[in-house]
Length: 338
Image (tube, rainbow, N blue to C red; front, top):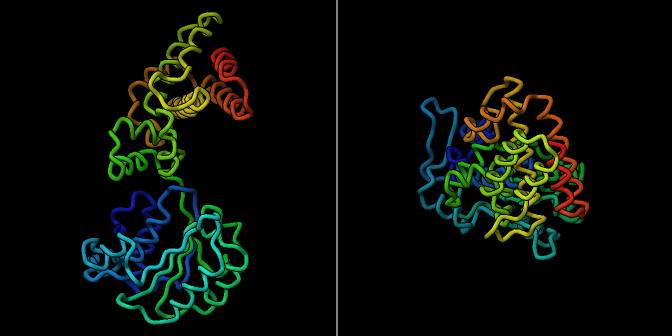
């Protein structure tokens, strides 16, 4: 995947594209940030750019990108290029010293068919201490034709001696619109389903994909209805009737607890957006931007103070659910707080 197809992280991608054009890519890098935001894809895009047979250069030569279609790019995409080595945790969940020694030995030689050998260590925080120590000398005196890219969502668990030898690029969570774009482009989501999943993903495509069991679209519809119902109903008894909305959606493969948790997370996202609207902040900050019309309508009943109090109540409800509280009790308590 070329740099231009990476969603989000434009500043970091531009930095790598410039470094590749000027042949100034550091011999070791640490790509750090939350899970599922595109760190591994960026590492592979760098490998493509360094080894592309028909690279695309900016008119002024200031940046470089891979073509994405030549033989080298296709091999890297398929994981079959002999000069792009990817290490990841094995069945034990860790990366052993033998795996590291193998790539270190191979990195000592000139690339077999590419310009640069790129070693990508995914989930680098899974490196056992012995493997990290084995990597140190190579990071201190890297082979001239090799680049080592460590990818980690927990970079501070790496040895300080390893971290100090790798310039760190910090990846932020993606915007909801960016998560939705990836879901539509790469995972065949319908636009509405993608937006619903993205709103609950906390900026991570990986989290959006792992949450498939709980129907995000249905959960968002329930959360919207609940906000409208509780805005109209002050009577406690009638509000408790609204709690039935939070029961597991028919046809969903999720358990009652998982479905309620999904509804609460979406409810939290909607309340945050209502707070954004109440404060007059930039509408681009909305996690549920596709619901802007509905949110504007709800905002007449949900001012900044009420949205903030409701947001805190939802957070408490989620915490109670995680501590194994009864879903029905949590739902009943919450509708009385909204």
